Amino acid sequence: MIDDGRVRLGAHGYRHEYTQLFFTSAGVNVSIETMQKSRWGPLLVHARLVGVQARAPNVAFVVSVGATGSDGGGHQLPGRVIESRDGQGRESITVNTDGLWKRNGKSPKEKIGGLTVRGAAGSKSIKIASLGKMPHLAFALGPGSKGQANEGVGLLASRAARGSRTVREISSSMSEARADVERHLEAFGTHAEVKQLTQAALMWNQLSRSMLPGPQTQCARGWGRPWVAFMWDDVFASMQLALDQRALAYSQLTTLLKGKLSEGFVPNMWMPNWISFDRSGPPLGALALRLLHTRYNDDWLVELLFEDVAAWLDWFWRKRRLQPLGLIALGSDPGAMGSKYNKPSLKMAKLESGMDNSPMYDEASFDNTSTLLMRLYDVGMSSLVVAELQGIEELDLDRLDS
Image (cartoon, rainbow, N blue to C red):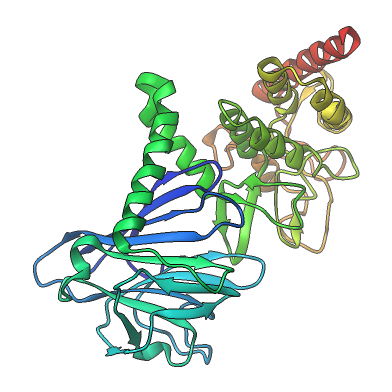
């Protein structure tokens, strides 16, 4: 979430061992890097100015956990907030440009969100007056502050009560972590830059939640929900992850296919407390499973997901064939009638295409009394179903041979 300003997402390691983003607001461009070598190891953060326009305001770098964007009493806080969420609350890294500072002579250390967060040795902390008593650490980043503006500020967050780093040590660690990510990308040769961009897009949108079987990359978040998943986007994500991350690719596809409904189909989209019960989307499960099996040759994955892919195709065969030719047509079933977004309609049937508002369906009509299908043979969807039938046949032969 960004209250104001712009964020450009940079590199993101597969194990979250290194991340970088750039935040620009009010003529100030800030680089924020993080690194963590292991799951329970200390988290290092390095923030520094990488560009300042003339007459840019003073900037503070703030780390806090609380009601991000307000003081807890419904009052909006000034500043520009970058927010990430975990299961316990909201963690925020804030670049604040309101100038409402007061000096703090205490050691720059604070208990935040169950972790001990401390500034790098030599850093001078400040207090953001508008944050009041909310636990936070803040550091003058520039351009009006001296000393810290050039090499930036550093933070160390850990479960241990002790530990220290200098800004220079943190900066050096970041450089090493960044170099490791870049060395991994070198294997992709002339496609390294494209690989970095796609990997960043996948990893910055990856979630791990108790309600999900495993880590999953979502294509979007919003609409007042912490995440939103779209079916065929998630399939494509599993194919992209399969390039060099077997475990994440397996988790991506397994989470998707195991999310099928009792009727047998994978829903078009889902989010916390809401699922598109009335429709599915372009069937690509067999294609993705075949690709993963060809690349890594793990028979157990086929055994795990074969029946899910078969059930999905069986649903298409039972529910989406339009007579007399028996080709596939888009449809929308009764589903959860309590929601206007699940009632059978032409609009909802269009969404099953994965192309949503494509003009291809502008002249189509919908049978809302008997078949609950568009009165239109869909050659593209029919071709996908045939390709999936071929793919599942090949997967079944692989199972018999193994």
